[in-house]
Image (cartoon, rainbow, N blue to C red):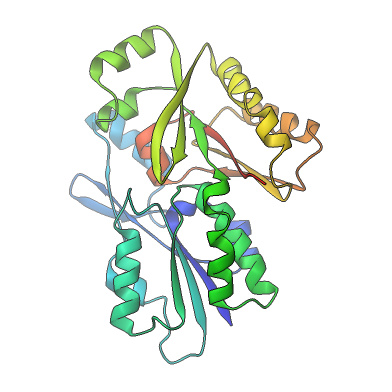
Length: 280
């Protein structure tokens, strides 16, 4: 049997986690001296409240080697495929490899650097789960995922620059002028790292619409299996308008809405929305 695991940055809904029997290894979120497990005893609303009260961005930390080893059964014949957030963003990938080496299970545990974050990871996790259901081995699954890693399209448009500024990813001057001019950056993942692509203006209903419309050609040529709307959180009417737009393309078999987890939320803040998919 092949078991699919992922660290908690994959941002999959509980329904999808249960449907595909995915094991989730939580990262840690530190609010000052208090430590919490992502998605277990802390959620984005708690992070926003603390960040606004303290004017700081929370620190996140990878699961420890011991944490990861608890998900691996040495005495079984099971194989494991483990997904992590991009290795350039966290020690999660390296800790997973260390856990596998420590457990002496390198022959049947395959650790995959997603080179992505949020449901950019989740798309790969679900593809792996489907391959496991189809009877593929861990090695075969890892090989198939390697073919799509660089085809995952993950981007987000941000409502406020405040949280990027607090986290040191945006200068105070840029944050000031960005807020004054109502600028909203589009952040994309490329080669395992986040970088700004474009800036939009206006109120949320406008800049979100512009952001999604800019992707129309790419969406029409995407893998038709599924697309994600991931947000942290946004006005339900805006999310519904994005869903309606995606439905109007008559392209995707599945349209999923998920909440962004602690990693995206702590750095990008509330009102962040992304549309994530796999290119053909």
